[in-house]
Image (tube, rainbow, N blue to C red; front, top):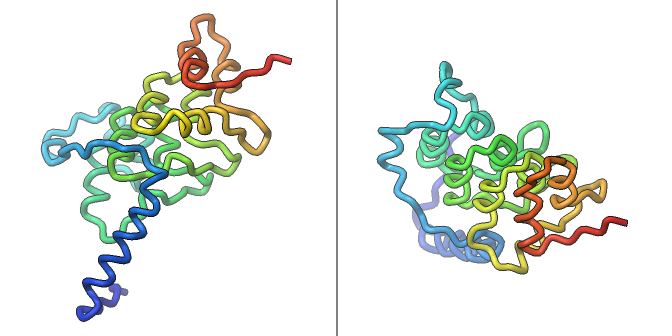
Length: 192
């Protein structure tokens, strides 16, 4: 069923939507909008070997790193909810973060995905990137937010009380760049 359009109330509706976007803007990183028009035609996705079939949804596209599909889906849809969750309670950013699909994450962030949304276990995309040891993804997600917001995200516990800092440390490799990055950006860790 097509949405009803009230042509007489067009201007006030736009103003209301603009006000809503401005209210939510404080939660979003300040990012410069990239031009994705060339990407739509000449997209070289991060996982080109896994592109034999088109993704079924934005979550699968983010999982595969299919940035071109993400952009087409968002730009061609009316009232697309970029923050929609899958059956695990994850957004597309959760999948991109866990699998280090940086270009896909950048596109999602540029289109305004909320970095604070937790999945079913209370973990944000920052938790998943930290657990996987993806320093470049952590930097991408945190780009453009204040130091105070970074510290809050880095030290936010999931429903079990586990923070991204602990997950990065749990990764356990000797040269844990993700753990170091989190600590350098306000991470708190109590070994006792």
